[in-house]
Structures are given as structure tokens and as C-alpha cells.
Amino acid sequence: MTIKKGHAGTLESNDIMISVEEKAPGFGVQIELTSIVEAQFGNAIRRTLAEEAVKAGFADIYIKAVDKGALDCTVRARMETAIERAAGVAALHMQQGER
Image (tube, rainbow, N blue to C red; front, side, top):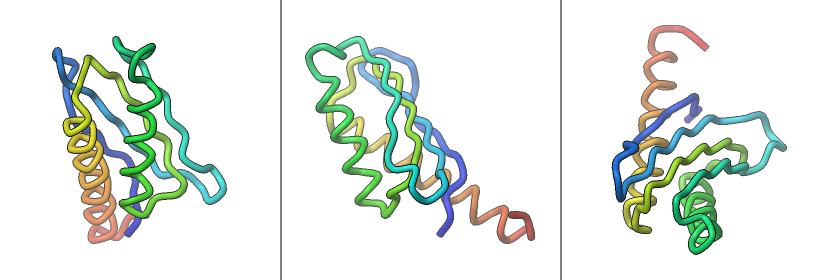
């Protein structure tokens, strides 16, 4: 499965907007996080995002997240959805003969 780009979430209070993009091998997991609770929970949010990327099988991925105070379960759900949407976009392009 090849991932392209995908996103999930909103910029509403208690939510998080996540965009993901697969990168070339060796890129690693890179996270750009903007959060209203950065000082208190920034490290935990980054850890959750990285865990979900690895769990989905992506070692080379760029993640951009704008957090408005989402709970951990919401961060995980949004990350899973962003990856699924990106994978769906990639599958659609492959069916249409694009790369």
C-alpha cells in the first residue's frame, strides 16, 4: 500500500486537524505540531502521532497537526483516519493508472 496525502479533523475546540504525507525512505517520522496545550502535552501528542504512524506501517512520513485540546483517543482516531484517507487516495490513483 502506498500512501500519498490525507487529512482528518477540524479546527474546532477539543479537536485536532492532522495531515499526513508519505516521504522517501530515510526521511523518518517528522512531526510539525501546533497546540494550545503544547507546554503541557506536546510530547505526549507527538508520541501518540508517531506510535500511530509506526502501527500503520509507515516509517517515513511527514505529519502536520494543529491541536485545539484534543484528548488522546481523538488524536489516535484522527491519525488513523488521515492515514486511511491517504491510502484510499493512493489506491484510487493506482486504479486509474496514475502514479
